[in-house]
Image (cartoon, rainbow over all chains, first blue to last red; front, top):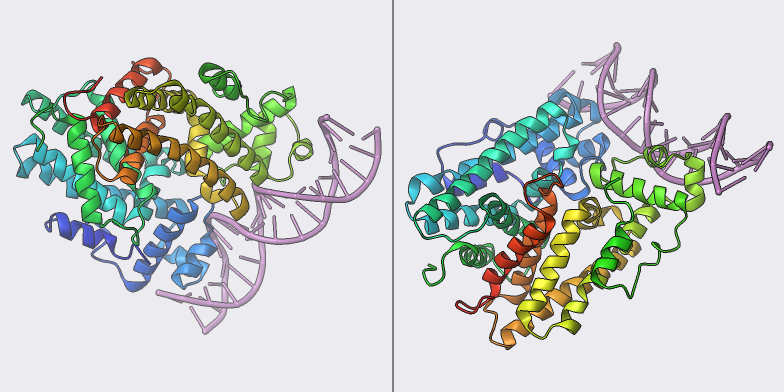
Length: 218
Length: 218
DNA sequence: GTCTATATAGCGATAGAC
DNA sequence: GTCTATCGCTATATAGAC
């Protein structure tokens, strides 16, 4: 179970002030359902995952599963909202803690890459299952994602105002930088040659080169 | 039908020597099945798309659909193999046509971004439905993807040998650069403010900054 | 080559006993 | 809170007429 208790771990690493609504008050059964959902939604996709699969993976019956949720889709929604909240909580200190835009973007990259390496299954769910949500739930998750993207965009804009960053189209560059960092989950394997820290460092360097005016990087 | 006849268009733009096995000999019905599969697999995902959906979208019955294919999965496999072949055909001239590594990588970026903008649904399928294939079919597609990635990696390595590119870990950088360019399909909309050419230019600039040693870009 | 009709299996979700 | 059993429906795929 690779992603067990990822909420606590990640929040603890970045900032120990906030935890997500679901993580702290979970019973053992709830946790096993949570882990099973992330494992299966992440590996096979939401549509390819059956209610029976989740129940089997969690070691309970289908009827018991329905005692803890109202529908498969609601379970997906909770996973995605929780994951976005964790990433938001990890990202926010970038703006309050650092005044140097280079340090701000490095904080964002480090958190994002680290999250996408260590919790790749959750990341895959939040990044590719928006289409599986109904309108209401999707708007809820999209609002969180927009808030997260806005932090990155403000950071790039701030760096440009300071004369430190040199970027073309702001929105395009924001998405390009985010895309660069997100894609790590598609190839990272825990048993690969590079540690998460090494990978994060490399991505920080790559993103700084994308943004910083020539001659002033790091 | 956004992706109609995307095979011919894209190949024609990049190199008119080769076309993919399926594109040139398609009847009208085959083409409508092809388009329907891409539309639905791309928009809803393979697992969430039913045989009935494809038949309805193509304007035929389920039984007729099975006259043209042996299974839903085989249809997916054909779409993915074809798309990878188109991208390979578009990428290969980078190495034969240009000796400057900057021109090589710009060719690759331009083709990749352009493909992912104009045929975003196909791109989404090839980039996210590997898990829906059985072992044999997946190995076939992965082999093509590896061949495609190898062109990018050779280009970066070549630029480094020439003293033009300055990159850290070769494999990581290859994937980061590819990830940067791939992510465009997640946000591009035909009715957005930027044209495909403008977006391609911006991505070329971003990737060059990622790679080229300071002071020698473009 | 296209159809109607159907086989067979699995789906999401629920009823109701304990 | 967890179970067994099942409802109602949809899934992929096929049979066989025309």
